[in-house]
Image (cartoon, rainbow, N blue to C red; front, side, top):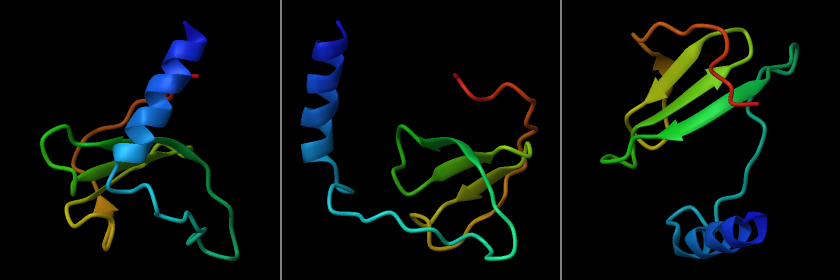
Length: 81
């Protein structure tokens, strides 16, 4: 089951519009931050939600160019791990 899931993940990754995106840290240099979850809206790939370890939820509607606080309430335990 895990191998099939990994193979499916690799196929989706190759089809993704983000496949050549290089991740980089853009957090403040004077403090750290932990990302708990990243979720892309199922019908709008430009709308992305990012949950951070402190309990805040950030939202972008322009593919990550500008983030702002989401109006959704976040409860601890948003992380699946």
